[in-house]
Image (cartoon, rainbow, N blue to C red; front, side):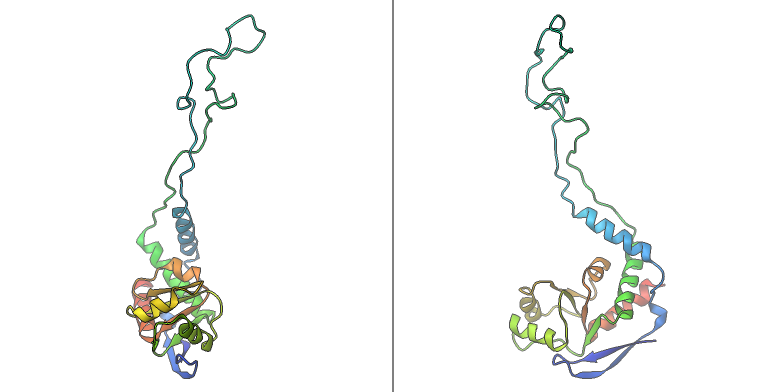
Length: 211
């Protein structure tokens, strides 16, 4: 049984939350995590590199010089890849690098990613994450009170306009709903700040996906 400390927005302790070991996985599914990271990275590639084949280079079919008698090698056209300004042999062309993964792989990666964050103590549970006003300075003070330094993923149970407005100007901070967060977002951020209601949502997802 793993225990997570619950704190208030001022950093004061509010109790503990228990996470059953049966819904965690810190030894398996590492390949699923790797596959997700590779797939997301590949999907972000633009794939817009493009070169011209010899048939696409502008030019006439006129021979650069006559076939025989010059002492030079035969040449049929200036668009040949062996010429400067000619086409490119086996060059890149626009393509999609997208990799499709089965839903089961995403689920396994999600379970492992969340389990690793819990096991490493990188999950900070907030009793009730609410702001009196939508100001970045106020939200920054809340994170500082919880000793959150550096990039962090904020998980909410339901959308809160004040938090979303206050967090959007903070570099390395992203706000996501617990019901929609995916494995890549968990992997990307070293610290998770989770509302207690959102943590219950995560537990339900873990129970469903670990089966």
